[in-house]
Each structure stands twice: as C-alpha cells, then as structure tokens.
Image (cartoon, rainbow, N blue to C red; front, side, top):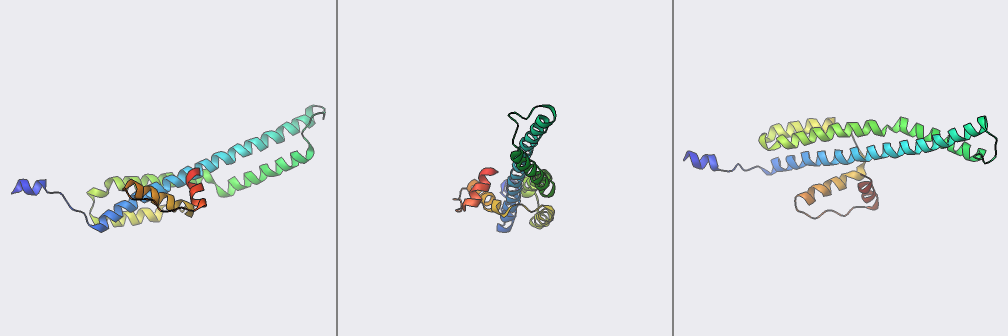
Length: 172
C-alpha cells in the first residue's frame, strides 16, 4: 500500500499550470526586452561614435590642416547636431539601464519557474504576483512574440503578429 502511494504521480490543478506558464512567460518577455534594449544601446553607441568621429575629424582639419578636402561645414553641423540628439536620447531613454532591469527580472522569473513545481499553488501565486510587481515595463510589441514562444514550446501554433511585432521580435 505504501509503495502504491509513493509511486503515485502528483496531479496539478489548472490554476497551478497557468501560474507556471505565467512564470515562464515573464522570463521570456523580460529576456526579449533585455535583448531589445541591449541592441538599442549598442546601435545608439555605434551611431554616437560615428558622429563623434566625423566631428573630431572636421575639427582636426580646421585646427591643424589646410581646408583642402575638409568635411563641409554643413555636414559638420548636421553631424554635430545628430551627435547631441543621440546623446540626449541615450541619456533620457537609458537603454542599458533598462536592459539590466529586464535581465534581473528575467532571472527572477526563471528562478520562480524552476521552483514552481515544488511549490503549493497559493505560494506560487503570491511569489508570481510579487515578481510581476517588481518587473519593469517593456515594449508592448514584445508581448505577443513572448506569448508565441511559450505556446510553440508547449506544442501549439503561434498567434499571427503585426509587422511591428515581427520587427521587434527580429530586433530582439
């Protein structure tokens, strides 16, 4: 009799399975957001470096050389303006900071997902709600791609995405 009880599989409620899926969704969504913001930060830095190099070459040409073959002043002004706009965008948007916040949230959801099957449903619901409260908001356009990655992992067909969602998914 004891052997039969020990070998019996524990059955999980529908609510518990949904909570586990929500924890996995939180991990996938925040992982996509982290990658999106990291890539935005990378390209913002590449553009700033390119614009800054152009302004530096123009300034060096004016200061140390003759003006033959110099970068036209209009291009220098445009590049300098672009550099300041890119710097302002990076300062206000802070994609690297956002990426780090999503990385931390993704790890928290992944940890919860790993422990979920050993928890009681009520405890899992509480911890999931607490983790969701602490998670940062990301682009809404990454919600459906994250959902689709979950349903495909479970063996279901993905939902149709808009062009914007497909673009954000590709960038991420």
